[in-house]
Amino acid sequence: MSDINDARARYERFAANEAPGRSEVYREWAEGVATDDEILAILSQLPSPHRQPPVVFAATRMLGSGEGTYAEWAAFVRANADRVVAECAARSTQTNEPLRCAPLMLALTRVRGPIALIEVGASAGLCLFPDRYAYRYGDEAPLGSGSVELASVLRGDIAGPSRIPEIVWRAGIDIQPRDARDPQDRAWIEGLVWPGETERAERIHAALDIAAADPPLMVAGDASEPGALEELVARAPEGATIVITTPGVLPHIPREARERLIATIQGLPARWITIDSAALHDTWDPAPEGERGFLLALDGRPLAEVDPLGGWIAAL
Image (cartoon, helix red, strand yellow):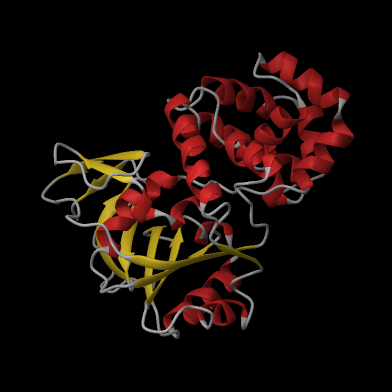
């Protein structure tokens, strides 16, 4: 498949399957791109991971495209093609959604503490503070007293956690880690929120304030490379249970590197919590039965089916 046809198919899928119900602006833009050969030719200059709609749309908004009609957005891209290509080439998907901590908590509270928490693909580290947020699981009593409340719907015969885990050390590794104290990094993380997601924008803004007030250790590196994750694990304090999380990052890692990373995690003296598509890898134990979406798992054992961004949790 040519680069232009690959880009066309990607934007068609995004307009049909991902944007509806979340962002009318992005749905309209993606539909427009899919039928605009001139814009497709510009975007096809980018490596595949950098031409993804959320990356391109966020980068162009940061450059000043505004959030108007497709015609207005496309005119901006045509007039600034070189800047758009350069900006997108330097960016990648770094969805940093603290709401993912709601399902992560179900697994964390099954781990004996104190906990040394490590996140792979941590972005700005917003999922490294599950003990600093407040939670509301369905109709259950609120849990925690943080300034940011994370609400998740419970489906089926499943209960939310009953306690906040003790986390004594936290660290993240990312190819391009972001600093919640840096205005440009904050602008990028907040810019990845889609137009129309007002509640999510407010949640991420407040979570960035929490991360900025007490920054975690952030390491620039590729966790799938030999030695990278092992070196970070070695820095954890003695006496703490090491927990490595990979919430939503594995789909963005090429297959060979992903398999190497999973094997590395499983060989370390650490617990592993992940949120992944059931079809992404074959290390579930036991393998999920029937068709499943995204699963929350502890050490490969599925605990629940979940919304990939944490909005709901369902009993298996």
